[in-house]
Every structure is written in C-alpha cells, then in structure tokens.
Image 1 (cartoon, rainbow, N blue to C red):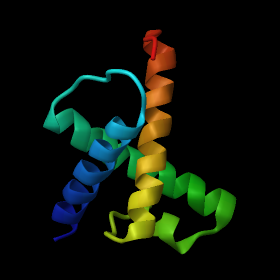
Image 2: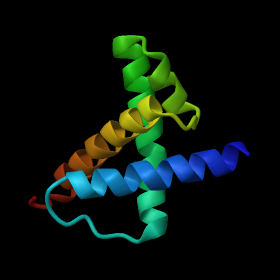
Image 3: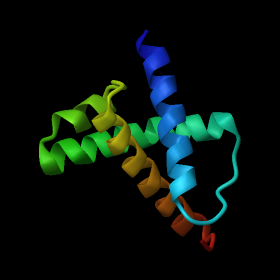
Image 4: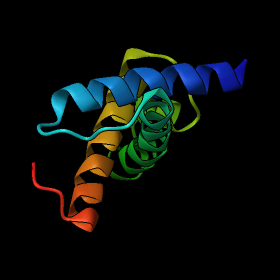
Length: 91
C-alpha cells in the first residue's frame, strides 16, 4: 500500500508543480511521477528541518494529505528550478 501512496502522491505533486511552474519542462507520466516523488522527499525534508511540520514529515514518507501534497509540490517546484539552472533552460 505504501508504494501505491508514493506513486499517487508523486503523480499529483508532479502534475501540479508542472502546471504552476512557468515554461515547458517536458517529460511524460513517469518523469512527472518521479519528479513528484523526489519533490515529496525534498519538500518533506526541508519542511521538517525548517518548520518542524508534521505535514512535511508526511510528505517525506508518502502520506496522502493536503499538507503533504503541498510540501511535495513545493519540493517538486524547487527541483524543476534547480534542473533548469543545471541544464541552462530558460523559463
């Protein structure tokens, strides 16, 4: 069940992040899901360290709640931004 939660959280967070972030990121459903899962890990970790938030901790373990989705989306947006800097893609 935990793997399904991770995949669902990743798909939701990755899709929302790609909708919010300006520019064209490309990638299919697998890339979007991967982006969301990595975003959940990054967003959950940063939220837990900086804010001590239990919602952020939920994102880092793949929990499905509004707070965990929010932190996962923020983490995914951060990853899109960093990827753009690394690959020198203009937004």
